[in-house]
Length: 388
Image (cartoon, rainbow, N blue to C red; front, top):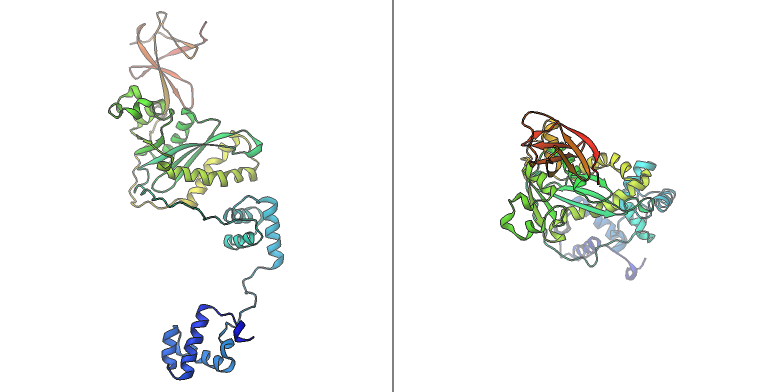
């Protein structure tokens, strides 16, 4: 190999310059060792190789030879075949995880990434990104949750578009999930109930300003934010639990949950595909376990270890009180009440409400609705649909 065509790394070029200085007497070998950051014994060996072979003697002896850790061509072909057959739209990291889980193939995600890029099966991103300042996370677990409904074709062409309800803790990135056909008050309360049962009552919830979470009067009239008359059904529940509701004024403001949505729209869609899940009911059977696995792998420790959650309700009666929707109605002259075209008869009992009194129908998330007057549960009989 001629010196004109000799290819050397930066460290090898530095050694060549230093060895020339040693050879000309401008530098002692001890000084050369310090210059290139090696021991004197190693410097002696390098000088012997330089004296014997010139610049070529400074090249790494294993140059051009395959690495001892290099995967075989057969293994590489098998991995790429499996990827193209089952994981063609998976990112390298997720594909490596699923190959280990389903096929028992052990391949490092960065190795897979290099192979995929070389075959043009994966394009590395990064260009055109816009720099934005990141909002500082809250310091304690439970200090702030972000809630959002992610509308997506979660089951691809195997089912209709539906909504994944997502709660994410701002301090840790911990999540809770619930699949729904639409983003309704009941479904938002179901994912919140999951969170409270597992972790306790959070301090505050950050949500966008859609009518499910906030009324226009609440958003536009800050002086009325303690007035129950401007609360949504969701806010009435959070008010009973003592949770502060904070409206978001831009998609970037709730960036934590938006980024989780993006991750799930990639990973969870593929998980549903691999498991053959195509209905809301099937999804909800596995989402709690999926969220637990996600949290084990991706949640981060909070800046402060103190938990900001308060105690969850303890009895069934407390759960029914906190997690329910309420509809006030007026008692008719025949001691009946009607709501949503259904009618109930108030039975004789002590301290019963008189006709004209306002009573409340409480509908818990699970179980039958019941009527309340002065925080007392009334004895009633369901009469069926009211006559038109």
